Every structure is written in structure tokens, then in C-alpha cells.
Image (cartoon, rainbow, N blue to C red; front, side, top):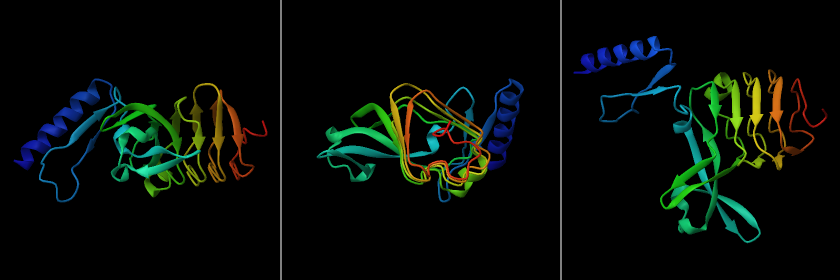
Amino acid sequence: MKKNIALILILVVLLVGAAGLTTYAVWPTEGSSSDSADIISDNQNSAEKYFVFKALVNSGSDEMALPLDEVENVNLIIGFAVSEYNGAVDNITIPSTFSYKTALNLPVKAILNTAFSLQSAKEIVTEVFIPSSVDRIDSAAFMNMRELRQVTIQGSGTINIGDYAFMNCSKLYAFNCSKTIIASPSAFANCPINPILG
């Protein structure tokens, strides 16, 4: 049975590859009872399934980021934040909205501390597209991403960039942002470019 599934998977990958689409397979996790793999192609945001989100809830005058399973009242969710990326896709687009239970299509407003700190992201991600809904990139969010070459932030308004957010991104030569940047002086430490200084 497993040999048949593997053969079918190889044929699907070859056929889709011949059609000019980039593909990769996502195998089930250890202990899973499934014998199948998900096939992802470029006509989807193939990185989206590898984001981990936290809910942003109002706590007085501040927003607080909570793990989704700790949110007691989904009506208090005002948006979402990327808290982790654990994929193997080199060009990633952060989604502009996310849904959890009855909190449907709310904006993704932030990229949290060390969101892209896993070793796999540091070695693979070369381009990041950030939607206009994001208005905050926290401390060390992209720190030490050795292969990151280009960041594009869409939209207008302002974006706050925290301490060491892009520190040691030694190949970051393109930072395209139409928003007004409010950044810590250390946000782009040891980078070949510094958009704050021009």
C-alpha cells in the first residue's frame, strides 16, 4: 500500500512539475495514522500552513498576545500575530488575515519576538512579503536570518520595528517599505543596508 502511495505521489509531483509549478510534499508527523502527503503548489500561499499564530486581545490600553488555546472569549480578539514560522519555503507571504473559531478574517497585525528564529527559517527564507495589516515587527523577529535577501512591506501608515529585528541579516540588500518606519536604532544592526538612515 505504501509503495503504491509513494508511486502515485511521485507521478503527481512529476506531472505538476512538468506543468511549470513548483511543488513539495508535506509528510504526516511521527505517529500519524495517515499514509498520505499533502501536495502544495505555487498557486497557493504554500508557506501559510507553517505559521503559528497568537491572538491579540485588548487588555486595557495594551494588546496582549495569547496562545490560541488560552483565549477564553473569542469576542475579545482584535487581531492575530505571527509567533512562529516552521516551514521550508524560501519565499514567504505573511497572510493579511486569519480566522480562529468565530473570530473570522481578522487582521494579522504583528510579527512577534523571535518568530523566525528556528534554524530551518534562518537557512532557507530568502524573501518575506509583509501585508499592510502588519503594523508591528517585534524585537529579534528576523534576527540572524543569514539567507534573507529581500523584505517587502506593503501599504501605508506606520510600522514599528523593535530592537534587533533584522540584526545580522548579512544578505539583506533590498528593504522595500512604503510605510513610515519607526524603528529602534539597533533594528538593522550588522545589515548591509539600514532603511532608517537612508
